[in-house]
Length: 63
Image 1: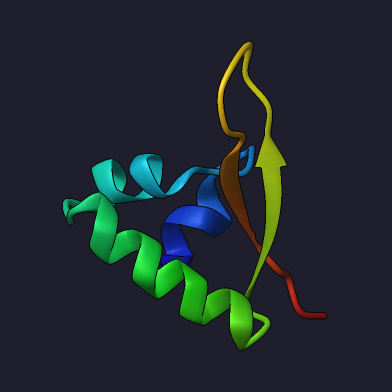
Image 2 (image 1 turned 90 degrees about the vertical axis):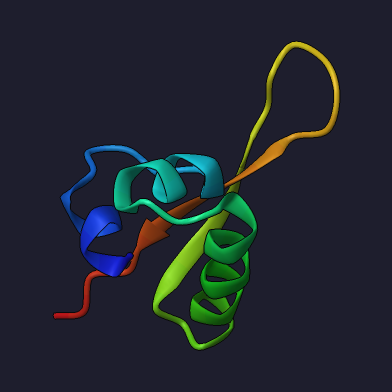
């Protein structure tokens, strides 16, 4: 999951991560939330035309 985020040029939604690695969106969301809590990924919001904004995740590159 972290590798998929690191290789992506742009932040990814939980659904995009799930599709990239072949797991369910709910499972991806659960693991991404845990990784965000531990500081491995950052969380932002992606605003569409209407409705609730979608969370997007990006790997935090340690130096």
